Length: 84
Image (tube, rainbow, N blue to C red; front, top):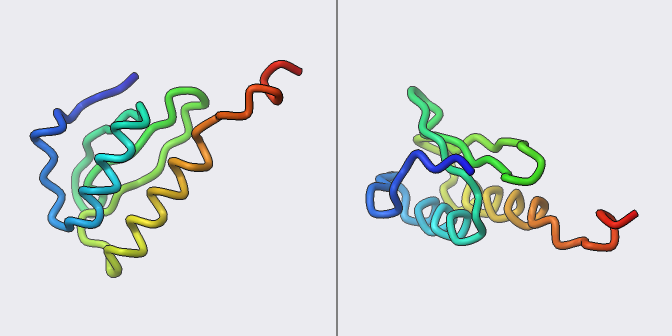
């Protein structure tokens, strides 16, 4: 797993996004750092797909929802699909 940030060091400017990042951390997603408009990224530990977290999203609530959808989509709880 890739964990660049310590939970106590997360400093995203939007509370909604910070809360979604806390959920991602609790779900064992890697959180990487970046620069510029991209604040950082989430990485799925099972399949390696990434999701960009923006520094200044136009709609913080919408961006938090996108992060939560990524978490839900990549929870990989489907054990039956992996067994086949």
